[in-house]
Length: 157
Image (cartoon, rainbow, N blue to C red; front, side, top):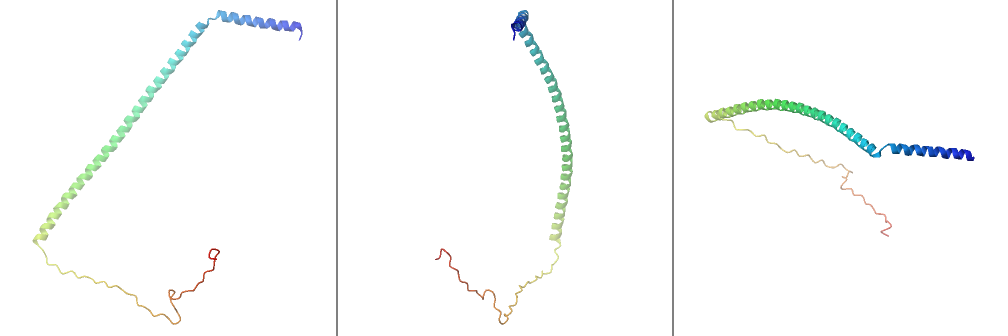
């Protein structure tokens, strides 16, 4: 590079340096920090407000769902209570009817006992299978024993 280009580059760098120093001197850093802090606080407040609104909406929605579920559950329970009370009434009627029948049957049995015929018992006899004599030349398996011899193994030697 030549001497002339070096001087031009150095002069440009010095010019940029002086521009930066002038800019920093003009701008007060404390003001910049303060404005940045206020900007962050405002953004935080806006965010908190939006979150609060969303939270309120969510609470309302959940409360509405809760009320709907409670209404449905109450309706369901009321229906089953009615059904149970109807079944209980029927059961009570049947119990009373059964009690009346028992008292009537007891009264009939004590007043008019008809002579009953003695019950006949059926006798059950055990059937025994007849034993058939074996045919000639035939022996049952249990009687015919095979004679087997063991082969010596390596351990027995």
